[in-house]
Length: 183
Image 1: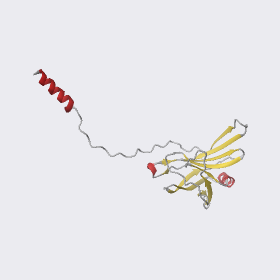
Image 2 (image 1 turned 90 degrees about the vertical axis):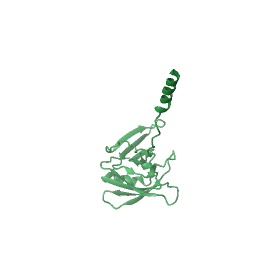
Image 3 (image 1 turned 120 degrees about the vertical axis):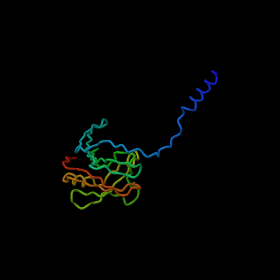
């Protein structure tokens, strides 16, 4: 009798406590997590080159909108940066989330362009280079930085329309009021 009771309890433990397989829920992509990078105005920084003692200067501004992309249901802020290195000005536009879209590469002639609209002025095109030292596709460098800087210094609002790989054109907005740049 003891053996039968032990077998019955063992059977119950092995098979009675097992969960039956539940239907699996559909897997959905996780909601994109985006850093809270609330725009704070122009941010300035200076750095000294340890090799030659020259100064490097930056002014950066975060976009006031978040751009949505179909790829992986992603979103991204953008950062507009003016930098002066070796007494040369550059204007850089960088996507803050690397898994979002990709700027169209500027490998072919004529160079790719983005449209810039300063306040209520008509849009103007500025060419860009997507050549970065690390080969990333989330950063572009604009041609004719002096003309761009002159417009940035007198504008309050800026819209930049850029084309993204398999995403089409998207508009990135900035509040550019108060830029101080004398480089």
